[in-house]
Each structure stands twice: as C-alpha cells, then as structure tokens.
Length: 112
Image (cartoon, rainbow, N blue to C red):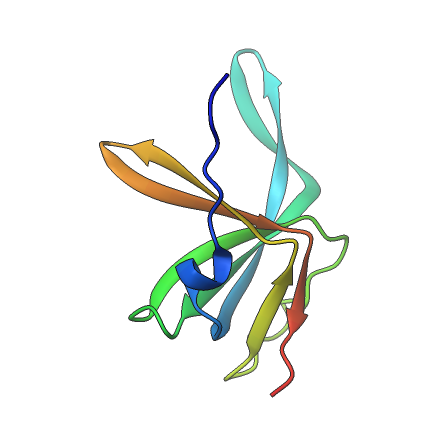
C-alpha cells in the first residue's frame, strides 16, 4: 500500500489566486495505435497565478459543463480573483523534478 501525502492547498498556493486563462481539454480516442482528438470537451484547464508565491503559475483541471469564461469569445477580465471548490493537489516526479497536478470540482469568482 502506497502512502499519499496530503497537501494543504492554501499553504501551497496562497490565498490570492488570479485567473489568467481558461482552455477546453478535448477527449482523445485511440485509432490504429494513435490517439486522435475529438470535438467532445471533457474538462477545462484554468491557469492561475499565485500572487503570494512569487507569481508562480499552475493549471487546475475543472470538470464543469461550462467554463467560468468563454475565452474563444473574450479574454478573462483583468484582476479576476478566484477560489476553487474541493481543490486537490497531487505531487508527481517528472525528469527528476517534483511537479504538482491539481484538480477541483468548481472554479468560483472570489468576493473582493
């Protein structure tokens, strides 16, 4: 049995999260040993800047039917602060570096 570390999301990302982009992620299906993208959107990736963490960026996977903003029609408004419902951060190792993956149930505009 492998132990999974529990990461405190506020201590890791900080309290002030600035939304900078929202992009759809499309389903990929295997055909003849290759993966091809379909037109079906499976989730959205929200790119945020952690203002209290030296402006580090992280992408958070959110499985919502509709995005908070449709960036194909307009950019995310300036100074949009957000929070996430049920945010989970999981560490993994890639090329001998510790990376973080993040997912959440929902993205919410923070009250200012």
